[in-house]
Image (cartoon, rainbow, N blue to C red; front, side, top):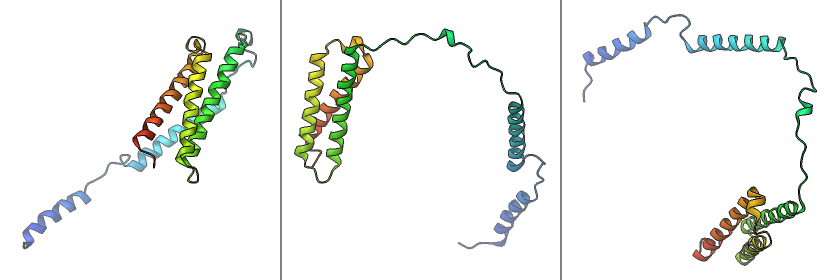
Length: 156
């Protein structure tokens, strides 16, 4: 394809129109940014000069007493913490190149047994500590999923 001079003239005029445009002051990005930054600095200065006045003892008498944690809750918390530790050991074993898959699967079976043991020992965990019960349910689901992955052959 040949480029004719009349084609080039049309493009040149468009470029000249763009460069010859008159820009209004204060419409460029830098001008707008500087204006905003000055407004932010003035707002920070005005806030720094007038700190709020508060009594440090305000509302101390309104604090509710903390209830003690029962022995069952402490036992459940320790057992759930043990589950989390077992899951971390399983993940570390699975990620260790020197460990075998049999070792990782053994950790996974221990985790499943621990979940079952917690459910047997604390059948009302969901009522007493719903947060801990949710962690136990999550660990059970993770263990079942990982066992399924092992049986399917995902880990080699």
